[in-house]
Image (cartoon, rainbow, N blue to C red):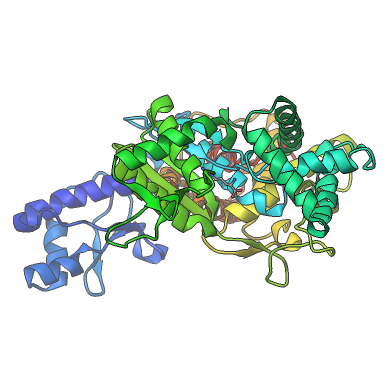
Length: 571
Ligand code: ARG
C-alpha cells in the first residue's frame, strides 16, 4: 500500500467510527500542494457537512478524534473550512526510506491479480516511410507496455500493420512501368516510394493505368502468385525500414500481424454480425446500425464485396480474445479515430466478443511545427522520422560537448544517442497526451526544466558522487536514514511517493504524471544537494545522505526506463 492509500484507509476507518451513517464517504486524501500545510490533506469534511447537515470544521474535529494514525503522522491540524492537514512523523519517514532502500522494487507493489493486456500500438501502414507523426503511438505505446510490465501484468505488444491497403495495385503496375528507371537505394522502401509517386502521376494522367492498377489489386486479392510475391517483397522492405527505427528507438513487439493476416476471417465476421441481427443489407452493402441512433452506421462490407478497416478490427478483436484471453485491449492512435473505436467497441459488446474485457482507445494529439501546423519539409512532405532521429543525435552532441568538452568520440556518440532519442521521447511523453504540442529542439534538449537531459544529468551527477566517494572508500552504508534537515525530509518524502506516481499514471495511461514526478524528484534532489553536503559531512550523516542519493538514482533509473529512456553514468 502506498502512503496515500494507507492514509486513506486510516481515515476511512475514522469516518466510519465517527459517523457510522456515512461510513461509505471517500476520505479524499491528496498530497499537499504546499508543504506549509503538511504532507497530505483530507478534504472529506466539506462534502460530509452537506450530507450530515453539520459544520465541516466540527466534522473534521470528530474525524481527527477518531483517527488512529499516531504511528504515521503527528497530530493533524484543521485549516480553513475543514481541511485535515497531516504531517508524517520523521521517525516514520526514516524507517520507510530505509526499508524502500533495501527493497529491489523501491516500494512498488506487484499486481495481486496480474492482468493480460494486449497493447496495439505503432501499427504503421506499409509502403510509406515513417514520419514524425509516427512517434507518438510508438513512444506512448511502448511506455504503456513498460509500465504494465513493471506492475507485474502480462503484456502482448502487438504491431497491427496496415499491410492490406489499396495502393498495391498501383505499386505492381508502377514497378512494371518504372522499376528499371528508378535506381536502387540503401533503403529499398525509399525506392518504392519514388516508384509509387511516378505511378500515381501516370494514373492521374491516364485512365488505362488506373484500370490496370485495379485489375492487379483484384488479382492480388484473388490469390495470384506473382502479385502475392510482389506484395510480400514490398512488405519486407517496409518492415526493414520500420525495424531499423524500432531498433534505434529501443521499441519491441511480441507480435507483428498485419491486417492481411485477418483477411480470410472477414467474410465470417460479416456473416456472424448478420446472424446476430447487428448487420443488415443497405443499398447492396452490409452495415451495422444502432437503432437508438447513438452512433452513425458502420459499413462492414461494400457493395463491390470489399471489406473495410472496421471489419478487420472486429476480426482482430475476436482473434485476440481467442488467442490471448486478455483482460484488456488498449489501442493507440491519434484523436481522429475516436469515432471508429467507439463504433468498434460498441459492436464488440453487442456481438458478445468483449465480455469480461476492457477495451480502451488511448488517443493523442498531433505534433506541430513552430508555425502551429503539422511538421512538413519545404517540399510539403511530412518530415521523415529517420532524419529527425539523426538530427536529434547531432544536436545532442553539441549540447553535451558544451557541458563536458573533453569527451572522446565514442563516448560522445553513446551520449548523443541516449540524450537525443531520450529528448524526443520525453518531449512527447511529458505532454498531456490529448493535447497537440509544438516540436521545439531547443526546449526538448535544454539542460534546464522538465526535459530528458535534465533528468539524465541529475542521474549522472549522482553517479559521479559515488565515483568520487569510492575513491575515498565510502559507499551507501547501513546506518539509518536521517531526515533532520528540511531538504532531507523533502527528498525522503518524494522518494516514498514513487508508487503513488506509478499508480496515478497507470489509471488512465498518463505518462506525463511519471514525467512530472521525476522532474519534481530531480528538483527536490537538486535543493537537497545544494544545501546538504554529502561526501564532506561527518560519517553518520554522510552515510544517510549517500543512501538518499542512491535511492534517488535508482528511482530515476527505473522511472526513465518506464519511459524507454536510457540513463548514463556520466554526461
Ligand atoms: N494503421 C492504422 C493507421 O495508420 C492504425 C491502426 C491502429 N490499430 C488498429 N487496430 N486499428 O492509422
